[in-house]
Image 1: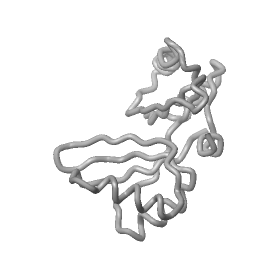
Image 2 (image 1 turned 120 degrees about the horizontal axis):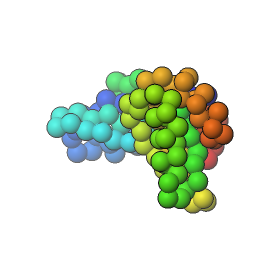
Image 3 (image 1 turned 30 degrees about the vertical axis):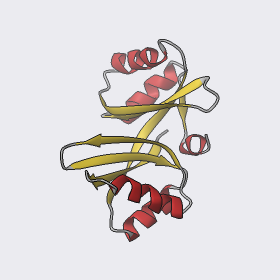
Length: 143
């Protein structure tokens, strides 16, 4: 069970991120969460949005360089050790984490961890076998 993410190659200059978010706002695309990783000249903006196809359409129309990739969303209790419990499962499954980011749900009871794994199917199987809550795209987009 994986979630679709949009990764956008963005020049590291003032106003570039604002322009990106304006384009999505004007298309009525809601950003559920994002991560920005940068270098001196360029960055990668990773987005989870509520309307992936529409976001991809407007980004393409505006000339953005982007890709659609799959990530795994795991819901955990928002408490000390919640992240560690998931990382322990992944480590014992011998799956590598390429990157991750997270956010806390509106209720504040749970956090959502987004992972890019080198072996996503094995990661999901390990998580399921330990009764971890892996979210579908629809469930994540509607939070």
